[in-house]
Image 1 (cartoon, rainbow, N blue to C red):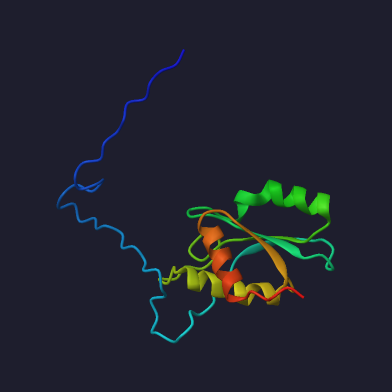
Image 2: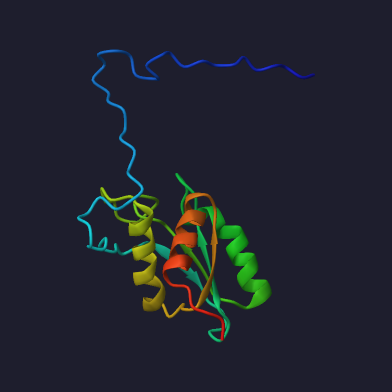
Amino acid sequence: MLRWARAWRLPHGGFCPPGSGFSKVPVAPSSSGSREGTQPRPLPLSYKLLDGEAALPAVVFLHGLLGSKTNFNSIAKALAQQTGRRVLTVDARNHGDSPHSPDVSYEAMSQDLQGLLPQLGLVPCVLVGHSMGGKTAMLLALQRSQPPP
């Protein structure tokens, strides 16, 4: 038997009652919060690397907002086993086991990956991103794109 769920409505002020002391969370601007002309400083991200053939480009999974590297555990394991590729799952800054920073811009997340991928010897690689991870992957691809041979 099907039951219908009641539609919930938020009060005019959202979840926070007036005068409760809770403030709304500010939304980060699309550009880096740092001074113009400076690059965001990369953070040492938490990751899990599944071993595979070094001659093949690795596959890098980037999770969405409120996610973590564990979101891709089963698919990463299956892909590594079936293709023989190295598979990397990464916690973005402010997510999972990675460090936190007030700068949560896509530029900063891209810089984090630009520091991590060469360090692990995963350049070139295939980027697979969901939601926030997809936007990060697109920005990284645009910043580091190379013309085909």
